[in-house]
Length: 281
Image (cartoon, rainbow, N blue to C red; front, side):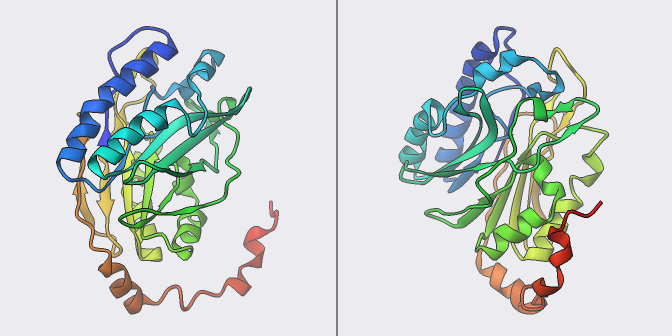
């Protein structure tokens, strides 16, 4: 997983986007050279977290998926035989935008995409409904060259149904590209996803951007990306204050071992949970 600061650039949103992509290329190459099998970039990797203001200028950074950025990075996926998860700002049609992650397989082929399902609009500075339509593609699981993976983006992690559905559909590793700052949700960062890894018997890779982003500086992104195993043990954790590549070796055989022991999926009672899908107050 990659954590990065915003590129040092004070230009237009399109120029910032270009600079951020260029900044990521050597880091993507570094991951490939180190033998990484599956690489996940941070939420909307090619820009700042612009949702702390409401300005239509950022709409200009949206693009189709698949599109120019997925096509460009697919070359590196093929070159290094590396699956790449590419979170971008998607333009579905003129005026309709999603917070999306595209998945490129190790042969460079586009496998599909996930659109962020839950869209926050909360103080301070998370004005996402101004930018994103709620995702409408459900919770797809992607069978890649190395593992079955599922994606849920940032705020989706606060809704345990996301991880449960993906795990029931066969995902072995879940990735959660995020933009998490000090204060509002930092204390949840290492609580929710280890708990969800345990509840579902899966690996989770949680990655987050780092640093203060000008001109807003509304909160410092805490980084601290990590991989957690099906027992809830954090295997590796980032420093939280610098651009870095976080790597972990994941033994997928442990998934069955853990599930055979706990049997949470055997003992589920979905017929008793009808109320959860009703529109209650």
